[in-house]
Image (cartoon, rainbow, N blue to C red; front, side, top):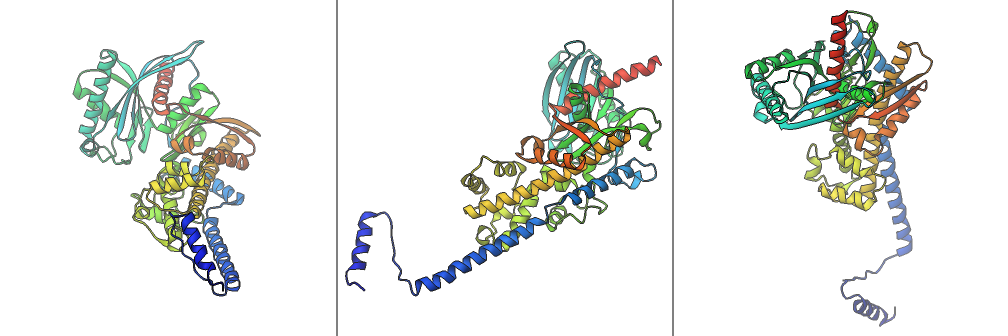
Length: 500
Protein backbone atom coordinates (compact mmCIF):
# COMPACT_ATOMS: atom_id res chain seq x y z
CA UNK A 1 0.00 0.00 0.00
CA UNK A 2 2.90 2.42 0.74
CA UNK A 3 3.85 4.39 -2.40
CA UNK A 4 7.69 4.19 -1.82
CA UNK A 5 8.19 1.06 0.33
CA UNK A 6 8.50 -1.58 -2.40
CA UNK A 7 10.86 0.50 -4.63
CA UNK A 8 13.18 1.34 -1.70
CA UNK A 9 13.28 -2.28 -0.50
CA UNK A 10 14.22 -3.53 -4.01
CA UNK A 11 16.92 -0.83 -4.38
CA UNK A 12 18.45 -1.63 -0.97
CA UNK A 13 18.61 -5.39 -1.71
CA UNK A 14 20.28 -4.67 -5.10
CA UNK A 15 22.93 -2.48 -3.44
CA UNK A 16 23.68 -4.99 -0.66
CA UNK A 17 23.82 -8.10 -2.86
CA UNK A 18 24.77 -6.85 -6.35
CA UNK A 19 25.81 -10.39 -7.46
CA UNK A 20 22.25 -11.71 -7.00
CA UNK A 21 19.32 -11.03 -9.29
CA UNK A 22 16.29 -10.95 -6.96
CA UNK A 23 12.70 -10.81 -8.21
CA UNK A 24 9.76 -10.05 -5.94
CA UNK A 25 6.45 -11.71 -6.66
CA UNK A 26 3.23 -10.56 -4.99
CA UNK A 27 1.32 -13.37 -3.29
CA UNK A 28 -2.39 -13.71 -3.90
CA UNK A 29 -4.23 -15.14 -0.88
CA UNK A 30 -0.92 -16.38 0.63
CA UNK A 31 -1.74 -18.05 3.90
CA UNK A 32 -4.83 -20.04 2.88
CA UNK A 33 -3.53 -21.26 -0.47
CA UNK A 34 -0.07 -21.79 1.10
CA UNK A 35 -1.42 -24.04 3.83
CA UNK A 36 -3.14 -26.16 1.17
CA UNK A 37 0.11 -26.29 -0.82
CA UNK A 38 2.12 -27.45 2.22
CA UNK A 39 -0.47 -30.16 2.86
CA UNK A 40 -0.37 -31.28 -0.79
CA UNK A 41 3.46 -31.50 -0.83
CA UNK A 42 3.51 -33.37 2.49
CA UNK A 43 0.87 -35.76 1.15
CA UNK A 44 2.85 -36.32 -2.06
CA UNK A 45 6.05 -37.02 -0.10
CA UNK A 46 4.26 -39.38 2.30
CA UNK A 47 2.72 -41.25 -0.64
CA UNK A 48 6.10 -41.42 -2.39
CA UNK A 49 7.81 -42.71 0.77
CA UNK A 50 5.05 -45.31 1.21
CA UNK A 51 5.37 -46.53 -2.39
CA UNK A 52 9.18 -46.76 -2.21
CA UNK A 53 8.93 -48.67 1.08
CA UNK A 54 6.38 -51.01 -0.57
CA UNK A 55 8.80 -51.68 -3.45
CA UNK A 56 11.72 -52.44 -1.13
CA UNK A 57 9.58 -54.55 1.23
CA UNK A 58 9.82 -57.44 -1.27
CA UNK A 59 13.54 -57.67 -0.48
CA UNK A 60 13.05 -57.81 3.30
CA UNK A 61 12.98 -61.46 4.32
CA UNK A 62 11.51 -62.63 7.62
CA UNK A 63 13.23 -65.21 9.82
CA UNK A 64 10.63 -67.77 8.68
CA UNK A 65 11.48 -67.11 5.04
CA UNK A 66 15.20 -67.46 5.75
CA UNK A 67 14.59 -70.74 7.59
CA UNK A 68 12.64 -71.91 4.55
CA UNK A 69 15.61 -71.06 2.27
CA UNK A 70 17.88 -73.01 4.64
CA UNK A 71 15.49 -76.00 4.51
CA UNK A 72 15.31 -75.92 0.70
CA UNK A 73 19.12 -75.74 0.46
CA UNK A 74 19.28 -78.90 2.62
CA UNK A 75 16.87 -80.65 0.22
CA UNK A 76 18.98 -79.64 -2.80
CA UNK A 77 22.20 -80.80 -1.04
CA UNK A 78 20.59 -84.23 -0.52
CA UNK A 79 19.57 -84.36 -4.19
CA UNK A 80 23.14 -83.55 -5.28
CA UNK A 81 24.64 -86.25 -3.05
CA UNK A 82 22.08 -88.97 -3.97
CA UNK A 83 22.95 -91.53 -6.63
CA UNK A 84 19.46 -91.50 -8.20
CA UNK A 85 18.85 -87.74 -7.88
CA UNK A 86 22.34 -86.36 -8.72
CA UNK A 87 21.81 -86.21 -12.49
CA UNK A 88 18.83 -83.82 -12.24
CA UNK A 89 20.04 -81.94 -9.12
CA UNK A 90 20.71 -78.20 -9.48
CA UNK A 91 23.23 -78.08 -6.61
CA UNK A 92 25.69 -80.58 -8.07
CA UNK A 93 27.74 -81.50 -4.95
CA UNK A 94 30.77 -82.47 -7.07
CA UNK A 95 33.31 -84.80 -5.38
CA UNK A 96 36.82 -83.25 -5.37
CA UNK A 97 38.77 -86.33 -4.18
CA UNK A 98 40.42 -84.11 -1.55
CA UNK A 99 40.14 -86.49 1.39
CA UNK A 100 41.80 -84.53 4.17
CA UNK A 101 42.86 -81.04 5.23
CA UNK A 102 46.58 -80.27 5.97
CA UNK A 103 47.98 -81.80 9.19
CA UNK A 104 51.19 -79.73 9.39
CA UNK A 105 53.52 -82.47 8.12
CA UNK A 106 53.42 -81.14 4.52
CA UNK A 107 56.90 -80.40 3.21
CA UNK A 108 58.60 -79.65 -0.10
CA UNK A 109 58.56 -77.45 -3.20
CA UNK A 110 55.42 -77.37 -5.33
CA UNK A 111 54.31 -75.64 -8.49
CA UNK A 112 50.81 -74.19 -8.65
CA UNK A 113 48.89 -72.89 -11.65
CA UNK A 114 45.91 -70.57 -11.25
CA UNK A 115 43.59 -70.19 -14.23
CA UNK A 116 40.34 -68.42 -13.46
CA UNK A 117 40.07 -65.45 -15.80
CA UNK A 118 42.06 -63.34 -18.25
CA UNK A 119 45.17 -63.53 -16.06
CA UNK A 120 47.07 -66.74 -15.47
CA UNK A 121 49.43 -67.19 -12.51
CA UNK A 122 52.32 -69.61 -12.10
CA UNK A 123 53.59 -70.03 -8.53
CA UNK A 124 56.43 -71.80 -6.77
CA UNK A 125 55.33 -72.61 -3.23
CA UNK A 126 57.93 -73.79 -0.68
CA UNK A 127 56.25 -75.47 2.29
CA UNK A 128 58.38 -76.24 5.34
CA UNK A 129 57.12 -78.34 8.25
CA UNK A 130 58.49 -78.62 11.78
CA UNK A 131 58.26 -76.26 14.74
CA UNK A 132 58.36 -73.15 12.59
CA UNK A 133 56.05 -73.97 9.71
CA UNK A 134 56.51 -71.60 6.80
CA UNK A 135 55.06 -71.11 3.34
CA UNK A 136 57.18 -69.09 0.92
CA UNK A 137 55.72 -68.09 -2.44
CA UNK A 138 57.10 -66.76 -5.71
CA UNK A 139 54.79 -66.04 -8.61
CA UNK A 140 54.49 -64.43 -12.00
CA UNK A 141 51.31 -63.24 -13.73
CA UNK A 142 50.76 -63.77 -17.45
CA UNK A 143 48.00 -62.35 -19.63
CA UNK A 144 45.88 -64.65 -21.76
CA UNK A 145 45.05 -62.81 -25.00
CA UNK A 146 41.44 -62.90 -26.16
CA UNK A 147 42.36 -64.75 -29.37
CA UNK A 148 43.92 -67.53 -27.24
CA UNK A 149 40.88 -67.68 -24.88
CA UNK A 150 38.64 -68.11 -27.91
CA UNK A 151 40.97 -70.09 -30.19
CA UNK A 152 41.68 -73.82 -30.15
CA UNK A 153 42.29 -75.89 -27.02
CA UNK A 154 45.78 -76.74 -28.31
CA UNK A 155 46.66 -73.04 -28.62
CA UNK A 156 45.38 -72.34 -25.08
CA UNK A 157 47.35 -75.17 -23.45
CA UNK A 158 50.47 -74.38 -25.54
CA UNK A 159 50.24 -70.82 -24.18
CA UNK A 160 49.88 -72.14 -20.60
CA UNK A 161 52.93 -74.42 -21.07
CA UNK A 162 54.90 -71.50 -22.57
CA UNK A 163 54.13 -69.47 -19.40
CA UNK A 164 55.24 -72.37 -17.15
CA UNK A 165 58.46 -72.68 -19.19
CA UNK A 166 59.17 -68.95 -18.85
CA UNK A 167 58.55 -69.13 -15.07
CA UNK A 168 60.86 -72.15 -14.59
CA UNK A 169 63.58 -70.27 -16.52
CA UNK A 170 62.98 -67.21 -14.34
CA UNK A 171 63.31 -69.38 -11.16
CA UNK A 172 66.25 -71.40 -12.59
CA UNK A 173 64.36 -74.69 -12.02
CA UNK A 174 64.04 -76.20 -15.52
CA UNK A 175 65.53 -79.54 -14.44
CA UNK A 176 63.50 -80.19 -11.28
CA UNK A 177 60.49 -82.53 -11.69
CA UNK A 178 58.10 -80.76 -9.35
CA UNK A 179 54.65 -81.90 -8.15
CA UNK A 180 52.00 -79.54 -9.53
CA UNK A 181 48.52 -78.40 -8.47
CA UNK A 182 46.23 -76.83 -11.07
CA UNK A 183 43.60 -74.36 -9.81
CA UNK A 184 41.06 -74.45 -12.60
CA UNK A 185 38.07 -72.26 -11.70
CA UNK A 186 35.58 -73.62 -14.20
CA UNK A 187 32.86 -76.26 -13.65
CA UNK A 188 34.60 -79.65 -13.70
CA UNK A 189 33.44 -83.20 -13.10
CA UNK A 190 36.29 -84.88 -11.24
CA UNK A 191 36.84 -88.63 -11.41
CA UNK A 192 40.00 -88.54 -9.27
CA UNK A 193 42.25 -85.93 -7.63
CA UNK A 194 44.25 -85.53 -10.86
CA UNK A 195 41.43 -85.80 -13.42
CA UNK A 196 38.84 -83.11 -14.14
CA UNK A 197 36.51 -83.13 -17.13
CA UNK A 198 35.52 -79.60 -18.19
CA UNK A 199 31.71 -79.38 -18.17
CA UNK A 200 31.44 -75.94 -19.75
CA UNK A 201 33.57 -72.85 -20.27
CA UNK A 202 32.52 -69.63 -18.46
CA UNK A 203 34.03 -66.11 -18.00
CA UNK A 204 34.51 -65.44 -21.72
CA UNK A 205 36.56 -68.58 -22.50
CA UNK A 206 35.54 -70.46 -25.67
CA UNK A 207 38.60 -72.56 -26.58
CA UNK A 208 37.50 -75.42 -28.84
CA UNK A 209 37.99 -79.16 -28.17
CA UNK A 210 38.15 -78.73 -24.38
CA UNK A 211 34.60 -79.23 -23.12
CA UNK A 212 34.08 -82.88 -22.22
CA UNK A 213 37.87 -83.39 -22.04
CA UNK A 214 40.14 -83.98 -19.03
CA UNK A 215 42.00 -80.68 -18.51
CA UNK A 216 44.91 -82.46 -16.77
CA UNK A 217 45.43 -84.64 -19.85
CA UNK A 218 45.31 -81.52 -22.06
CA UNK A 219 47.99 -79.96 -19.84
CA UNK A 220 50.16 -83.14 -19.92
CA UNK A 221 49.90 -83.27 -23.73
CA UNK A 222 50.96 -79.61 -23.93
CA UNK A 223 54.02 -80.34 -21.74
CA UNK A 224 54.92 -83.32 -24.00
CA UNK A 225 54.68 -81.13 -27.12
CA UNK A 226 57.07 -78.60 -25.58
CA UNK A 227 59.63 -81.30 -24.62
CA UNK A 228 61.51 -78.92 -22.32
CA UNK A 229 60.62 -80.05 -18.79
CA UNK A 230 58.68 -82.66 -16.85
CA UNK A 231 56.01 -82.09 -14.20
CA UNK A 232 54.07 -84.42 -11.93
CA UNK A 233 50.44 -83.18 -12.11
CA UNK A 234 49.00 -84.32 -8.76
CA UNK A 235 45.77 -82.34 -8.38
CA UNK A 236 43.18 -80.28 -10.22
CA UNK A 237 41.57 -77.84 -7.79
CA UNK A 238 38.52 -75.55 -7.60
CA UNK A 239 39.21 -72.07 -6.11
CA UNK A 240 36.65 -72.65 -3.31
CA UNK A 241 38.52 -75.80 -2.22
CA UNK A 242 41.83 -73.91 -2.43
CA UNK A 243 40.40 -71.28 -0.07
CA UNK A 244 39.34 -73.93 2.46
CA UNK A 245 42.75 -75.65 2.34
CA UNK A 246 44.69 -72.39 2.78
CA UNK A 247 42.70 -71.51 5.90
CA UNK A 248 42.85 -75.12 7.19
CA UNK A 249 46.65 -74.88 7.18
CA UNK A 250 46.38 -72.00 9.69
CA UNK A 251 43.31 -73.29 11.54
CA UNK A 252 42.64 -77.07 11.71
CA UNK A 253 38.90 -76.56 12.47
CA UNK A 254 38.41 -75.06 8.98
CA UNK A 255 36.35 -77.57 7.00
CA UNK A 256 34.26 -75.21 4.84
CA UNK A 257 35.28 -72.88 2.00
CA UNK A 258 33.21 -69.92 0.79
CA UNK A 259 33.69 -67.58 -2.16
CA UNK A 260 31.64 -64.38 -1.81
CA UNK A 261 32.89 -62.13 -4.58
CA UNK A 262 32.04 -61.67 -8.25
CA UNK A 263 30.59 -65.18 -8.07
CA UNK A 264 29.35 -67.27 -5.15
CA UNK A 265 30.16 -70.87 -4.22
CA UNK A 266 30.91 -73.12 -1.24
CA UNK A 267 32.57 -76.45 -0.43
CA UNK A 268 32.83 -78.53 2.75
CA UNK A 269 34.07 -81.85 4.15
CA UNK A 270 31.23 -84.39 3.76
CA UNK A 271 31.13 -87.94 5.15
CA UNK A 272 32.03 -90.46 2.44
CA UNK A 273 29.02 -92.61 3.41
CA UNK A 274 26.73 -89.76 2.29
CA UNK A 275 28.39 -89.22 -1.12
CA UNK A 276 26.54 -91.82 -3.15
CA UNK A 277 28.19 -90.77 -6.43
CA UNK A 278 31.61 -92.10 -5.28
CA UNK A 279 32.61 -95.57 -4.14
CA UNK A 280 33.70 -96.07 -0.52
CA UNK A 281 32.21 -95.07 2.80
CA UNK A 282 35.28 -94.50 5.02
CA UNK A 283 36.38 -91.04 6.11
CA UNK A 284 35.49 -87.72 4.47
CA UNK A 285 35.83 -85.94 1.17
CA UNK A 286 35.56 -82.28 0.21
CA UNK A 287 32.51 -81.62 -1.97
CA UNK A 288 32.39 -78.63 -4.33
CA UNK A 289 28.72 -77.62 -4.07
CA UNK A 290 28.45 -75.30 -7.11
CA UNK A 291 25.65 -73.70 -5.07
CA UNK A 292 25.19 -70.73 -7.44
CA UNK A 293 22.67 -72.88 -9.36
CA UNK A 294 20.43 -73.27 -6.27
CA UNK A 295 16.94 -72.20 -7.37
CA UNK A 296 17.39 -73.08 -11.06
CA UNK A 297 14.54 -75.59 -10.63
CA UNK A 298 12.17 -72.82 -9.46
CA UNK A 299 12.43 -73.52 -5.71
CA UNK A 300 13.29 -69.86 -4.97
CA UNK A 301 10.67 -68.28 -7.24
CA UNK A 302 8.53 -67.12 -4.31
CA UNK A 303 11.29 -64.79 -3.06
CA UNK A 304 12.54 -63.59 -6.46
CA UNK A 305 11.30 -60.11 -7.39
CA UNK A 306 10.49 -58.61 -10.78
CA UNK A 307 13.95 -56.96 -10.63
CA UNK A 308 15.67 -60.34 -10.14
CA UNK A 309 13.76 -61.65 -13.14
CA UNK A 310 14.81 -58.64 -15.26
CA UNK A 311 18.48 -59.18 -14.35
CA UNK A 312 18.20 -62.88 -15.21
CA UNK A 313 16.48 -62.22 -18.56
CA UNK A 314 19.24 -59.81 -19.62
CA UNK A 315 22.11 -62.06 -18.52
CA UNK A 316 24.26 -64.31 -20.74
CA UNK A 317 22.94 -67.46 -19.01
CA UNK A 318 19.20 -66.88 -18.56
CA UNK A 319 17.55 -69.28 -16.11
CA UNK A 320 20.88 -70.41 -14.67
CA UNK A 321 22.79 -69.53 -11.47
CA UNK A 322 19.69 -67.92 -9.93
CA UNK A 323 20.95 -68.00 -6.33
CA UNK A 324 24.27 -66.49 -7.43
CA UNK A 325 22.34 -63.74 -9.23
CA UNK A 326 20.73 -62.75 -5.91
CA UNK A 327 23.83 -62.76 -3.71
CA UNK A 328 27.03 -62.22 -5.72
CA UNK A 329 28.93 -59.07 -6.61
CA UNK A 330 28.54 -59.50 -10.35
CA UNK A 331 24.76 -58.94 -10.17
CA UNK A 332 23.93 -56.74 -7.12
CA UNK A 333 24.62 -53.51 -9.00
CA UNK A 334 22.32 -54.66 -11.82
CA UNK A 335 19.48 -55.32 -9.37
CA UNK A 336 19.99 -51.81 -7.95
CA UNK A 337 20.00 -50.27 -11.45
CA UNK A 338 16.72 -51.98 -12.34
CA UNK A 339 15.05 -50.68 -9.15
CA UNK A 340 16.35 -47.14 -9.80
CA UNK A 341 14.96 -47.22 -13.37
CA UNK A 342 11.55 -48.26 -12.03
CA UNK A 343 11.53 -45.55 -9.32
CA UNK A 344 12.60 -42.93 -11.89
CA UNK A 345 9.80 -43.98 -14.26
CA UNK A 346 7.36 -43.51 -11.38
CA UNK A 347 8.70 -39.97 -10.80
CA UNK A 348 10.35 -40.66 -7.42
CA UNK A 349 13.97 -40.16 -8.54
CA UNK A 350 16.13 -37.92 -10.75
CA UNK A 351 13.12 -35.65 -11.55
CA UNK A 352 11.62 -38.54 -13.53
CA UNK A 353 14.39 -38.33 -16.18
CA UNK A 354 16.01 -41.67 -17.15
CA UNK A 355 19.52 -40.69 -18.24
CA UNK A 356 21.64 -42.61 -20.76
CA UNK A 357 23.81 -43.67 -17.80
CA UNK A 358 20.92 -45.40 -16.09
CA UNK A 359 20.15 -47.27 -19.32
CA UNK A 360 23.70 -48.67 -19.44
CA UNK A 361 24.02 -52.26 -18.22
CA UNK A 362 26.82 -52.90 -15.73
CA UNK A 363 27.23 -49.19 -14.82
CA UNK A 364 26.63 -49.92 -11.13
CA UNK A 365 29.70 -51.93 -10.12
CA UNK A 366 29.71 -53.53 -6.67
CA UNK A 367 32.50 -51.17 -5.59
CA UNK A 368 30.02 -48.27 -5.95
CA UNK A 369 27.57 -50.10 -3.68
CA UNK A 370 30.35 -50.57 -1.13
CA UNK A 371 31.24 -46.86 -1.33
CA UNK A 372 27.63 -45.59 -1.17
CA UNK A 373 26.84 -47.79 1.86
CA UNK A 374 29.90 -46.76 3.84
CA UNK A 375 28.80 -45.35 7.23
CA UNK A 376 31.47 -42.67 7.01
CA UNK A 377 29.98 -41.17 3.88
CA UNK A 378 27.90 -37.98 4.09
CA UNK A 379 25.08 -37.46 1.59
CA UNK A 380 27.15 -34.91 -0.31
CA UNK A 381 29.73 -37.63 -1.00
CA UNK A 382 26.99 -40.02 -2.12
CA UNK A 383 25.86 -37.29 -4.54
CA UNK A 384 29.46 -36.96 -5.75
CA UNK A 385 29.64 -40.73 -6.48
CA UNK A 386 26.34 -40.56 -8.38
CA UNK A 387 27.63 -37.56 -10.32
CA UNK A 388 30.78 -39.55 -11.24
CA UNK A 389 28.35 -42.07 -12.75
CA UNK A 390 26.68 -39.27 -14.69
CA UNK A 391 23.57 -39.18 -12.46
CA UNK A 392 22.58 -35.64 -11.51
CA UNK A 393 20.97 -36.13 -8.11
CA UNK A 394 19.48 -34.09 -5.30
CA UNK A 395 20.06 -34.86 -1.61
CA UNK A 396 16.65 -36.60 -1.54
CA UNK A 397 17.73 -38.78 -4.49
CA UNK A 398 20.92 -39.72 -2.62
CA UNK A 399 18.93 -40.84 0.44
CA UNK A 400 16.74 -43.09 -1.74
CA UNK A 401 19.71 -44.54 -3.69
CA UNK A 402 21.52 -45.33 -0.44
CA UNK A 403 18.41 -47.07 0.90
CA UNK A 404 18.03 -49.15 -2.29
CA UNK A 405 21.69 -50.25 -2.19
CA UNK A 406 21.41 -51.18 1.49
CA UNK A 407 18.24 -53.21 0.95
CA UNK A 408 19.70 -55.24 -1.95
CA UNK A 409 23.02 -56.05 -0.24
CA UNK A 410 21.26 -56.86 3.06
CA UNK A 411 19.15 -59.53 1.32
CA UNK A 412 22.25 -60.88 -0.46
CA UNK A 413 24.10 -61.33 2.85
CA UNK A 414 21.04 -62.93 4.47
CA UNK A 415 20.44 -65.54 1.77
CA UNK A 416 24.16 -66.33 1.66
CA UNK A 417 23.97 -66.80 5.46
CA UNK A 418 20.93 -69.09 5.08
CA UNK A 419 22.90 -71.30 2.69
CA UNK A 420 25.84 -71.43 5.09
CA UNK A 421 23.50 -72.27 8.01
CA UNK A 422 22.28 -75.29 6.02
CA UNK A 423 25.88 -76.54 5.63
CA UNK A 424 26.98 -76.14 9.28
CA UNK A 425 23.81 -77.79 10.59
CA UNK A 426 24.31 -80.69 8.18
CA UNK A 427 27.90 -81.20 9.38
CA UNK A 428 26.71 -81.08 13.02
CA UNK A 429 24.05 -83.72 12.34
CA UNK A 430 26.49 -85.84 10.28
CA UNK A 431 28.71 -86.07 13.36
CA UNK A 432 25.87 -86.58 15.84
CA UNK A 433 26.81 -83.49 17.85
CA UNK A 434 24.63 -81.27 20.04
CA UNK A 435 27.03 -78.40 19.45
CA UNK A 436 29.52 -77.80 16.62
CA UNK A 437 32.58 -75.52 16.60
CA UNK A 438 33.75 -74.96 13.04
CA UNK A 439 35.68 -72.47 10.89
CA UNK A 440 34.82 -71.23 7.38
CA UNK A 441 37.63 -70.06 5.10
CA UNK A 442 36.39 -67.09 3.02
CA UNK A 443 37.62 -65.25 -0.05
CA UNK A 444 36.02 -62.72 -2.39
CA UNK A 445 35.79 -58.97 -2.87
CA UNK A 446 32.15 -58.65 -1.74
CA UNK A 447 33.00 -60.22 1.63
CA UNK A 448 36.28 -58.29 1.99
CA UNK A 449 35.28 -54.82 0.80
CA UNK A 450 31.56 -54.31 1.45
CA UNK A 451 31.03 -52.45 4.75
CA UNK A 452 28.09 -54.57 6.00
CA UNK A 453 27.91 -57.84 4.02
CA UNK A 454 30.10 -59.95 6.31
CA UNK A 455 28.45 -58.74 9.54
CA UNK A 456 24.90 -59.40 8.29
CA UNK A 457 25.91 -62.84 6.97
CA UNK A 458 27.55 -63.83 10.29
CA UNK A 459 24.46 -62.70 12.22
CA UNK A 460 22.15 -64.69 9.91
CA UNK A 461 24.18 -67.90 10.38
CA UNK A 462 24.08 -67.37 14.15
CA UNK A 463 20.28 -66.96 14.15
CA UNK A 464 19.52 -69.84 11.77
CA UNK A 465 22.03 -72.35 13.19
CA UNK A 466 22.03 -71.59 16.95
CA UNK A 467 23.74 -74.90 17.85
CA UNK A 468 26.81 -74.08 15.77
CA UNK A 469 29.62 -71.73 16.75
CA UNK A 470 30.97 -70.58 13.38
CA UNK A 471 34.22 -68.63 12.97
CA UNK A 472 35.01 -66.94 9.64
CA UNK A 473 38.66 -66.75 8.57
CA UNK A 474 39.78 -64.58 5.66
CA UNK A 475 41.91 -66.45 3.14
CA UNK A 476 45.21 -64.97 2.04
CA UNK A 477 45.92 -65.97 -1.56
CA UNK A 478 43.56 -68.96 -1.44
CA UNK A 479 43.80 -70.24 -4.97
CA UNK A 480 47.60 -70.41 -5.36
CA UNK A 481 48.65 -71.50 -1.89
CA UNK A 482 45.60 -73.81 -1.66
CA UNK A 483 46.55 -75.65 -4.88
CA UNK A 484 50.07 -76.26 -3.49
CA UNK A 485 48.67 -77.51 -0.15
CA UNK A 486 46.24 -79.87 -1.90
CA UNK A 487 49.17 -81.16 -3.96
CA UNK A 488 51.20 -81.67 -0.77
CA UNK A 489 48.31 -83.53 0.91
CA UNK A 490 47.84 -85.56 -2.30
CA UNK A 491 51.53 -86.53 -2.33
CA UNK A 492 51.27 -87.57 1.33
CA UNK A 493 48.19 -89.69 0.63
CA UNK A 494 49.87 -91.29 -2.39
CA UNK A 495 52.87 -92.28 -0.28
CA UNK A 496 50.58 -93.76 2.40
CA UNK A 497 48.69 -95.79 -0.22
CA UNK A 498 51.96 -97.10 -1.71
CA UNK A 499 53.15 -98.17 1.75
CA UNK A 500 49.86 -100.00 2.39
